[in-house]
Length: 122
Image 1 (tube, one colour):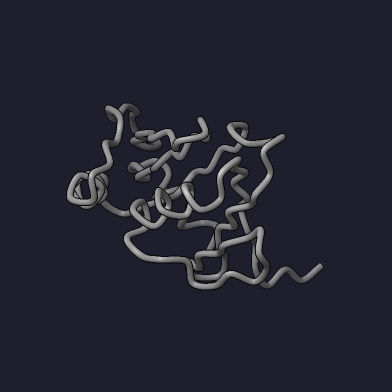
Image 2 (cartoon, helix red, strand yellow):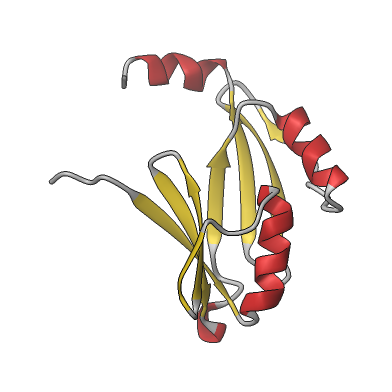
């Protein structure tokens, strides 16, 4: 099987309100709105789809691997968003933020053990 791109899906009950919040989170407007009920942001070989789905809103979970937690925290603060306290250890440092529907976005900065493990996967 050859997979060329993956998307994480976040369900919301108010697409336009959520679009505003995720635009603040990512620091930019969506890259594409391929249909009326979907907004997309692209990152490398993947992306995030914001989906108008009231029945499933608040149940989505998203983990974003980042390089610098302090930089993310500063950027979010400048855009009026507050990232929760960081926790973790040798494998990763993580901090979370919850969107307006209750969906949870986790930022994870790899620690020394994760970086060593990932060397063998490349």
